[in-house]
Length: 163
Image 1: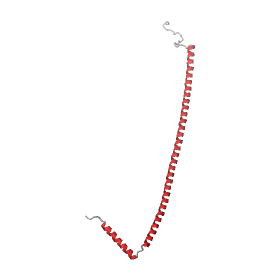
Image 2 (image 1 turned 135 degrees about the vertical axis):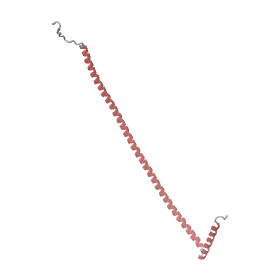
Image 3 (image 1 turned 180 degrees about the vertical axis):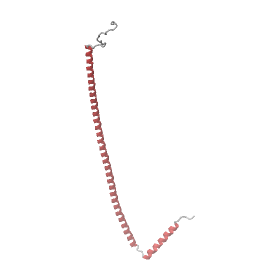
């Protein structure tokens, strides 16, 4: 019976996983260093690229701002020139209207003076003519009645023709 009970032998566990050699450990270390260097290089490259793009953006923004400032200045200058032109045109129109009004007033004054002189001359001629043809009041009345009768006859004959 003793033979039936077996006592297990003490054995050491044996790993089937290969133990890394120095070459493999060195290769793994080199690959980790290489990965760290690549990560650092990528980050530096990304930082440099971001800095480059940021500088390009800032330059474009400055140029855009300068162009906008120039456009604003030119628009302001144009508005000033347009306003000055409108004021000049308005001033010239007012000056022209004033000159026309002064010339018209001068002409009217000369015309009134001329008409007054002509009226005075006519009155002088008429009074001289009347002095030559002095009529008595009865003669003047007779002449007036005769002229009125003539006017009435002309008016009555000048009516519409009878059909």
